[in-house]
Length: 549
Image (cartoon, rainbow, N blue to C red):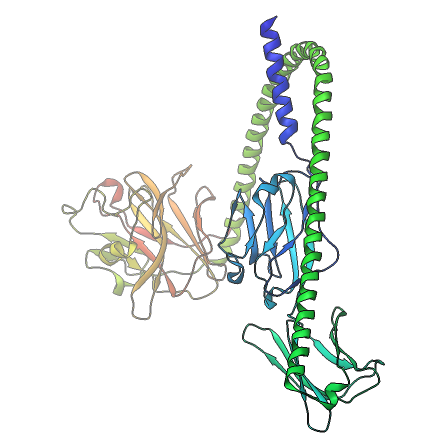
């Protein structure tokens, strides 16, 4: 009873672990729909979360701009990948490692710059699914710097300077009634880091209400910032230096208060985010408690299911035995079908080759041996149709033709010392001729490419040596010949780049070279047997081609 309880407890623990670490195949990546606005030089967090709140520790998290392969930050295989990271974000972009297991994939940027403005995309991928969310970031510039000075008899002049990263910022001065004031001059300067600075000067005269407004408009997104400057009437009559300094200090104080209010607003926003995160954590804890209760209830059901599984296992074993028998029968049937298909394929191939052979007979040409290419050891008949060897073969090796099994073979060596070429060369068309080899135990036939300098280049042929039939070009390959040929047919199709060999007596196919590169003029070549025994005394004979019956 204790062993059974122990095995059940282990099974429950494994089930609990599976439920704890599993994640749904589908999830959503969510973030803010409104742009994230931040002042230049400050840090910013681009919020992004997974729904449901699954762990992102084993997922791929990629933040990028326009190019997917050049990223702002890449988290992959549980670590940061910096191979193709955009250099300007190195050491400035990061995630929150402790928050990944809660589904928080937010990006933190330190010291934002003008180049950081624009759209960012958060891409999260698992083996089963992927999703993304886009966030627009707007970089706010610094506050305006305004100086006040007396301008002779024309009134008071405002010298202003706006350091901003607005790509299309526009400055307008208004009086207390909302009327535009004429700008004395204005200029725009873009620094090396891409920031935009606006400078200008406005001259105003005394009014009933000496209240003036500086308005900065970012036209692309409709962002508006206003600053109000009030001047007492005495300044228009007595523009003493200490008063000018006083108003400058007052403006600076107003800017400081405004910056403090912005900081308070940011702190309030962060506190709200922290409270939201705590609420999500409490919700997760409640869900875990509910799951524990369900597992306790499932314990009884597992005991009942175990008995049903035992019965099902016996039935499965019986079914597997029947399936094994059926599979063996299917394999035997497939083997028989494969053999039948192979036999049918051989028959079709043999019939095709015989038909090709009879068609090739219509391309017969008259081939004559060229005595100028023969060595003194060879005897050429007067009609140029026969060649035999008359030399002494005592110094020849046991393999006089130099053929070997699938090894490198240079036919030019044997042609120079043993062979003879035909007079007729081919540079186009189809050509067929036949050669009587009889019962000889060694010979070689085929074609060779000859350059303008009478040099032998590529060659293709078949031959018999040491009881083996072989095809050779740059390498040798053993051939299976069902019936030994006494007369060999050679067919050359220059246009189709093909050289084929046939057993004329059996009207059967021997071997073909396909997809060849014919760069030179092709000549037939003949290498007679070098042995002088009874089987090899007769010459190689070029015979007339008989028309098919």
